[in-house]
Amino acid sequence: MVPLEWYLVLAAALFCTGLYGVLSRRNAIAILMGAELMLNAVNVNLVAFWRYLEPAGTTGQVFALFVYAVAVAEVAVGLALILVIRRTQDTVILEDVDLLKG
Amino acid sequence: MTVQQILFILFSALTLGTALMAVTRRNVFHAALFLTLSFFGVAGLFVLLEAPFLAGVQLFIYVGGIAILIVFAIMLTREMMNPAAPGANRQWASALLVAVALCGVLGWVALNHDWQVTPGPVSPDSMSNLGQALVDPQGFVLPFEVTAVFLLVAFIGAVTIARER
Image (tube, rainbow over all chains, first blue to last red; front, top):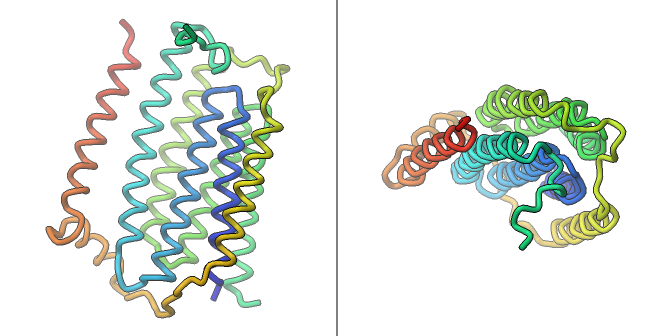
């Protein structure tokens, strides 16, 4: 059997890859893709903890399903916002969108 | 090395390698294709973790839904992105530093904590247990219903935001 630590280290690496994408990308859609990678890493962690710490229960899997619901809502609203920014500001580069900068 | 460990290494290499490509490719469309491959790798990990329902949901929602939606959005905003412009912003070096440092801290904690692992097989009807837990008043029926309302609100919000005025 694969040790639990392997899954945790993999999820940490995947989470940090997504974090790097969120922090370093200019395109708004690419930033959203980084956030999706982070949510995936969290799901790997939740399912690994369920499998290794509480295989008789269901809590870890149920939490992962709720993460899916949040991820879907985030993508739907995020892409709608990006399309509106593209229409009104004529850009998808988030650095160029500075409407709230006093 | 057992078969499971070899499969784990294969799936994690697929997931991490394509995830790294997805956050570093300059072309957003290529990045989205690599992201889809990364979602496939995570589905493989769920199969290894004996959560077949979640592996299926991963394929339906991420590969079938979110990846397609992202590709749509890229197509709709295609002409906005100058292919010669850099894909990363000016703070990419400090972002890399933060990500590597956080990865080091998380990995150190994961390797040094004494996890109380409960060995034991997954019950053969874990999938029906999962379905019952979601609608069980002693279980998760309230968060389940709140999630339904939340999704409805999010989709109405998305339509309202994106509508042409």
